[in-house]
Length: 142
Image 1 (cartoon, rainbow, N blue to C red):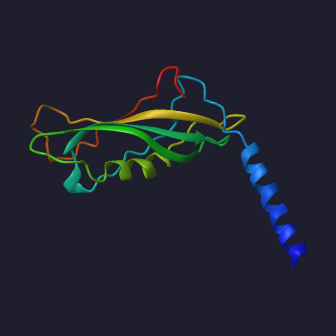
Image 2 (cartoon, rainbow, N blue to C red):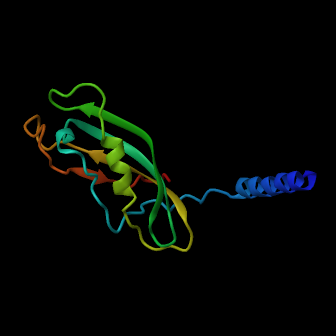
Image 3 (cartoon, rainbow, N blue to C red):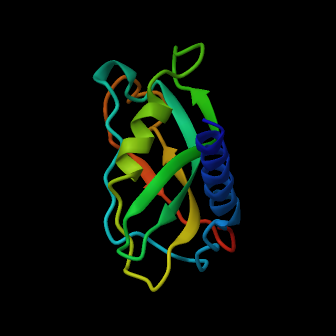
């Protein structure tokens, strides 16, 4: 029994040591733009109730696929008669960004982009979908 416990402790130590030794991928080069994007799909009742942007961080694999997207910050502003907190915006962004594609590369790298939602016109389009979003690469940031 003691031998089994020692083996389990040894295995856990090796596993944790390997995880701790794994370094995060380096930052991607600045000015990197996706080769294809997918717009976030908001439920119809949420379209254009808020405008603003979310900063999304993720890893780009050597094959150009987005992995592990995470929203690191978001700033939303009510449009028209909207009030309260936005619901569904962050949840719509992550699956869309996960489908984006970038050029193939030698090694994986970490990248960060803002995803913006904007309302076309001043107050006249509130409540209508315009699918207006912008994936804009950050200059000099990763």
